[in-house]
Image (cartoon, rainbow, N blue to C red):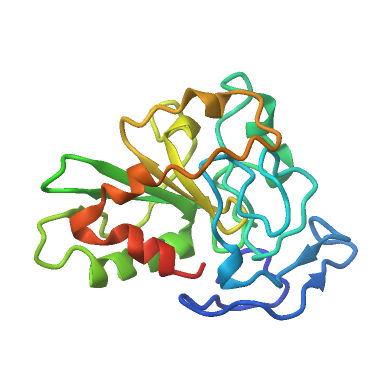
Amino acid sequence: MSGLTLGKSDAVAYGAGGGHPVTIPKGEPFAGRTSGGGTRGEVYGTSEYGSGYPGLSAGSVSDRNLPFVFWPVVWRSRGYGAPYLYSPEYGTPWNTSRPGGPLAELVLASSTSNNTFYVISDNSTVASLIAALSRNCTAGTGAALSQAPSPFNATASEPQPEQAVQYFRASSVVLLLDGYNDTSALGNGHGRDRERDRGGAARLGEHDASDVLERYHW
């Protein structure tokens, strides 16, 4: 696994997680914060950015520990939506220091419901999810699934925060639905913690992709 991982070389899908968090040493990005320690049961967030942090409310990713090692997804530059959506401390989407590599996306298009879903996360996580979804969801269904991760550069033509259905793993993974438009996501977050919208995820239905995302441990 690439990026700044404090010596960790890989991450295990479907694992239990846990362990002792490590304090990031002086001279490293985010020195003094802790990294690791999050468990599988703690990966689930809501549709609000900043969710999925164990014991913390949504609405911010700034100055937070890294309970799952991975850094949160970053959106495009300030001026679109509320300030809470933008935290320059994590750099650009193409930051190669990001654990797991630069941000990437996958696309899953349903052949029966005319819905298109996206997942955005680091490159390693997206590659692993493509393999998991291919094994568990798309065989024999005719669903169109990305064959490899595509770079996510957070431009205006790419998925936007108001399309988010659910965040996972300290907001370092996000599931989005094309055409979904929750404009409240562009408002002033800070602990709003809206109820998770499972409607969008449920519409994956016949491919059981939502189930794979629920069971997958990033």
